Length: 380
Image (cartoon, rainbow, N blue to C red):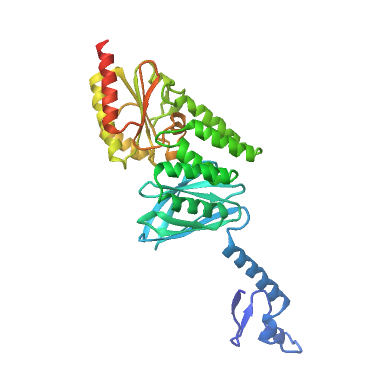
């Protein structure tokens, strides 16, 4: 109940209700007590309405909205990013942490996945529903142990993740397959297929296609899922032994980038970020090779930084001149999906005919492979 202030005799009046003293001043015949004014029909209706609003606010985000709130121990102040791979928001937003607490709320009419990107660039999915609110709690120094509650899907994801922390990589993949079989209609299943079979260091597009087909059979009216299955089938073309996929993008200087930039050369498509020292070292090494071999080596790089300006400043400092794509969408950059890249550093190496010969080599193996191929080219 909202009170508007005090009358001349020290009483408090309910907003919208005339004080008893005012009636008496106009010649009213009977005294209206403070108790009766507070329990008048107008005040009671207002109190009930505000109580309903308060209850709704405490239970969720309200119809047509989705809310994320939480608290991190060992993180007094900071920020992290959030993006949505399926249209919950466009681009990315920033979530600010103050005194260990944070909150984020957006309009949402249909279910969507939100991905939180933390300062160490680890990621955590949050599954949104209209009118729902989820709570995140954990220790900033042990993000893998965070818990997310508030909806069935987020609690399922938390349970899976905490169990996966104790498993080996092959066991985690097996657990993901089992989860999809038990929950084919859950958005968690789609995330697990993407994370462990599509965006993996060594993608398994055949397994991903198999799992997605089973999910679509259980939910045949899911248009998003049907489209995603088609996209995964297209990704099969970027497997080792196939030709480089066709692509088009715009680099940080606003110039068009496409297959013409790689055709007929030894090709390297790689990922990097200003926060990854290994990927920066690879770029410097590629820069030295470019100076030595010139047009025999073609490179297209994808920077997953959130701010293209950071990418441009680093390129300028290290004299990187070949095409670099950085659209600020981080892991949601379409070119990553096109080449099936999901790590930093990550890479795809193709021969002079544009056929993919290797993927996601570590630094030493990448150098060995590329220098061997360039040596062959120079001998011709």
